[in-house]
Each structure stands twice: as C-alpha cells, then as structure tokens.
Image 1 (cartoon, rainbow, N blue to C red):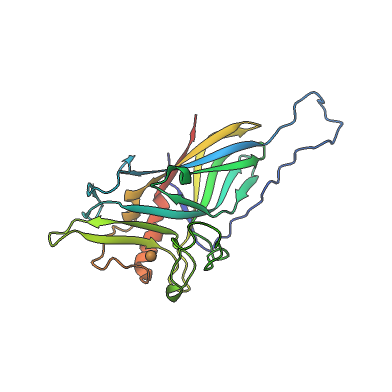
Image 2: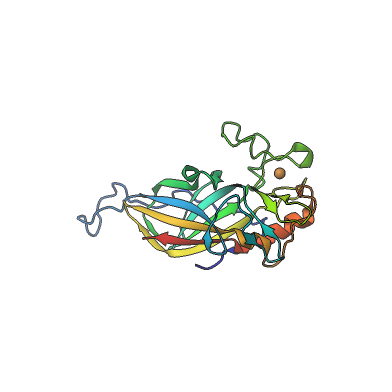
Length: 256
Ligand SMILES: [Cu+2]
C-alpha cells in the first residue's frame, strides 16, 4: 500500500465514462466463439485507521505528530470524480458525490455498476468537491445536504470533510473541528491517485478497499497542532496545510 500522490487542485480530471469498445454485434470476429467481454461491478469500500489500527470513536487515545492527544467523535466527508484506470489507458469515472460517514457502515460502500471490462490497476478520486460541483444546495435532495453545508458567509458550497473530537488540555479537554473546504474563493480540494493490484473486470464482482489514515491529516509535510480556537473554516493557512497533508492520507488495495 503506497500513499497517494497529490496533484494540483487545478488539474481537471479527465472523465471518460464508459468508453470501452464492446464490439456489440460487429460480427466477423477472428474468433466468433470467443465470449464477449462483459461489464462487471466494482465495490469501493472506505475504512478509517489511526496509526494503522481501526478507528475507535469517543476516546482520547491518539497522539498526533505535534504531540496533541485527541479523540474522534465525528468523521464525515465527500469524495467526487471516482475513477478506475485501466492498464490500456482507459478510464471509467463516476462524478458522485460519494458521501461517507465513518460511523455508518452502509455509507462506506459505493458500488459502481456496469464497469466496462478491463484490467484496472489504479483508482483515483477528488477529495472534496471540485469547483464545478461545490455550489450551495447543488445536492438538495441528498440527506447530507444541510449537514455538510459550508456557510455562504465563508464562501458557500459544502464541507469536504468534518472531523471533530476532543483534545486533552490540563485546563479541561477542548474541542477541535478539522473542517476542510473552500475559504471564500480559494478551494482546497485535491486529487488522489492510488495504485492497486490489478482487478480484471469481466462480468464479475470486485472490490477495492480505500483506507484513510487519520493521523496523516496532522503530519507530512506539516505537523499540525490543534489550534486553541477550534474554528478553522476561515483560515486559509490551516486549510492549505491540511490540503497538503491530505496527499499521504489515503491508500488502496484490491480485496481478494
Ligand atoms: Cu465547518
């Protein structure tokens, strides 16, 4: 499992949905008895770890790179532009958004239907929403629309992530709110490309597990100390630090 590469937020994701040539009814194949390749299903499952161990909520049991002891009480986030990359260069992409709530297992599995037959060796996604999608109430019909809303006074659109918990403090445990999004005009989404062991899609079901290493939000390259003021939604410097740290948060593997 290698950490994801980070790419500039301005790089547009080429989405070439379903561009596989399936030779439907073309006849005159060299081998007319060869079965036609057929699409399959790929399930993308999210899981969350801290220092390699499955996330346990509501307990100040973790220590970040800056030495802060912390807990996690809430973790919700949006992924978009989920794409499978085939060795032949073709890409199967779905824009989403894909909402994830780490407390709700059912929200963490995204089944991609009708994935064109190919051998896929990488998965990519945008963490958060790109600017074409990050518009207030663009997803009004989604149950998370208001939960994830980013205040219009701060630039509108949606939170990319809400990661909340408590920090140990001799004066009394205090809250932190690692909320990532757009500060006014400045977006902080990023694109992640994750290599996977090749999955061969041909009428079958496959799964890919994507792991979020929560401790990586707080280091590499920036050791992040939870600020005294938990409210960071209007702080571009902290938003940029989290965006850059995000490049090493994710890894992926094929499930066999
Ligand atoms: Cu917020």
